[in-house]
Amino acid sequence: MSDQEPTLSAVIAETNAPVKAGDELTVTVTVSNRGEEGEGTVTLIGADGEELDSTDVELEAGAEETAELTWTPEGSDVGEAELTVEADEESVSETVTVEDAPAEFEVDIERAPEHVPEGGSMTVSAVITNTGTLEGTTTLEITVNDDVVQTQEVSLAGGEEEHVEYTHEAGDSGPSDVTIGFETADDSASETVAIVTESVSIVRPGESKGGMSIFAWLMFLGMAIILIPLLPIIALIKLIDMLFGKRGNPA
Image 1 (cartoon, one colour):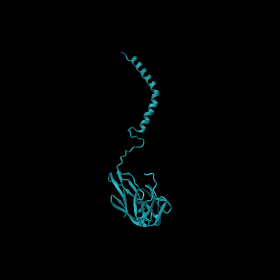
Image 2 (cartoon, one colour):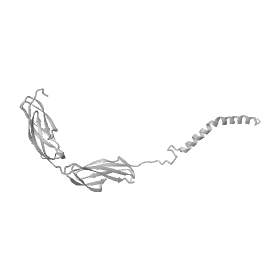
Image 3 (cartoon, helix red, strand yellow):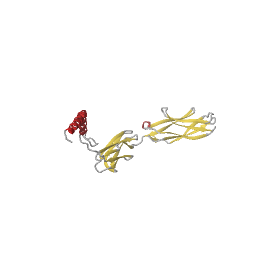
Image 4 (cartoon, rainbow, N blue to C red):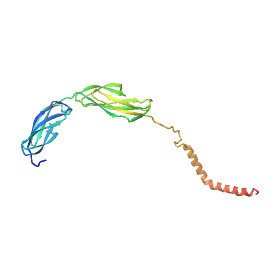
């Protein structure tokens, strides 16, 4: 980048207006340098003073080049919009037309389980959004493994959305995968859910998985608590029995 200061001016050569809301508007400008060689910035400004886009250009003295600035209008921008291109301290403006966008229905999966047990049920939900600015109606098809199981009409104003869910019973057909899909004329989305077989051990009340019941362990501990203090007495009785038993028996 040069340290010298250029003096830039810009002229709007053309735009691709009119455009529909949600589509990109391109403003083509011719930038000239009436000063010294150097680099400057060309900026696209909206009607509310907001900077929409900018680009840097580097020009020799007396040179010119073409640059493009872009802006994607929203539904709130429908109508006439005044755009301004600024280069250094000069500016030039042009009014462009932003038209309504027809209804278009986008589909996104919102929530789905990763897996469900065999014989269980799965609920998958999707959000349907009208990305256009005009109200419209579409037919939504819900599919299970590509087979249509349900259809419904969805009517939405521009920018509105609706949440839809479908519950499928997994059945007892064994481990498998089930794909739940949501489809409009404009878009589709799906989610695959695994069906798993759960191995569950039945544990009766009072029984542990280790094999010995809780009651057996309690009885063992109780007997140990009772017998441990009696062990010296039992040993003494055994010793007396051994001594007197020997004396009473003739050799």
